[in-house]
Image 1 (cartoon, rainbow, N blue to C red):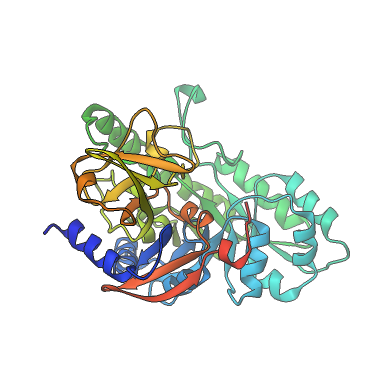
Image 2: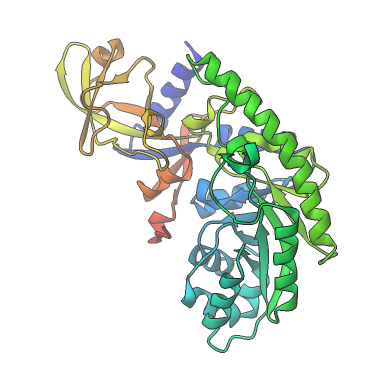
Length: 400
């Protein structure tokens, strides 16, 4: 029996009393992935990206482990909710225009001390001030550095279009703007190198593209390490007691941690290890989050139909954004139908061994987005469900 077949047997036994559709997290795999992230971080703390987890219980589980500290959130409303729930170190990774949320933040000392917001433009500071509604609390802010690699005098850009702050001079100028403005405190710098951390460099069946990605990433890492160090020096000249410099992501943990200028690493997807993180040479993890759909039809030889399953991930549309049938091994989509809103036909020899009501296990392309489809996660240890916990959706919350 292969390791995957053994996992399928465990998951089927553990959930035999539960009807699909359902979602699980294998805690043995989750914990092993957490330990691997800590190992790769080389002693630097890991800030957990909440958008990749979207379950309070599992955020708490990760943060209870040595080597993890703080949360990187994705909306202001989520940040305030997490702070009210007892989390006390929350870095909002994206700028916000939530005026009501800023009024709440500026009016509550507990929230103001727990939440740091992201800025990269003086207009964002003006929006926050206009939204204060009498609140006098100092708002903690972090500056985001654009990590994209620019070549040929800027005519070629590789990386996400995020912050407008690219050069050390631009970031230092923004730091001076914050420092001069009453009611704000600059506490950190963040730089997410998505073109390194979020792009696999070992693409199955595409050796030339994989080599090109590795060459690009090596160049980008060198350029960013030098520029990030210069940025930190420039900002510390303005704010000497900067609390942290955050960088990285699941796919670049060990590389980013090696930079002296970086004080902490961001990671979240590496806890669940969705399918987009299968294509890396620098690390491998254990799939921890899966969902199951029930077999509801047997249309013919070598074909079964499961209920639902059409859960595409965000990003540029493509086959890599689709979930994949994972267990039993050997199933594939019908290329003329793909995963459907209400039903999904699956092809392959294992189909003939599946009965009506059996579970087919899938992996989502991304991590936390799976939790927007399910209101609960069944936590598996060994071959038993030991707890069932709500996702954000299960707590009645949809932040984006």
